[in-house]
Amino acid sequence: MAVTQVAYEIDGWGVGELVVEDGRVVWHELPWPRPGISQDPSRTPTRPGLGPGSVLSEKPSSVDRGFVAEVIQLLRRYFAGEPAPLGDVPLDLEYETPFHTRCATALHDVPRGAVVTYGELAGLAGAPRAARAAGTFCARNRLGLFVPCHRVVASAGLGSYGSYGVGYKSRLLALEGYVHAV
Image (cartoon, rainbow, N blue to C red; front, side):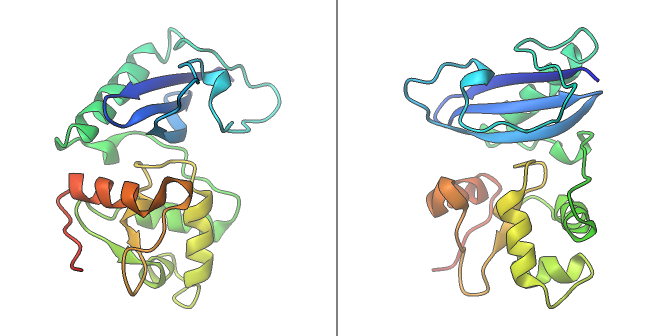
């Protein structure tokens, strides 16, 4: 199994990371300003934990080269505020539990500019009383933007967005045309 890991930079957002395996995105870390950290993927703050036998490379393999370049171009379009068909990108949507896999599939289908609450996400995943479990899924999501947890809001407001913060979440939603009523 060959795995391609690349860092990419988005002006005004920072450095993100993309991991591709066999023509599917398996990990995506949102861009974030990282002073003192180069674009060398081995120096990014998180690691995808792809398991034994994985080969990590700074450069796309010849098999993935075109795919990785296309995905990064889509990400650049997204962060420029342009419509980008991120929903068409092949993904590894299998998560550690069946519920999390259902959350990933349901959230992947929430359209640009729309939001759902944690309770609604749980319902879409077949467990309407599992809002906290849906929140746990969002906290562990490894496919930021492709499985858009920024589109999941609290019932009484935007809610948090982990270490990125609510400002980052608001900024992503604004790119998509969502306006939060204060």
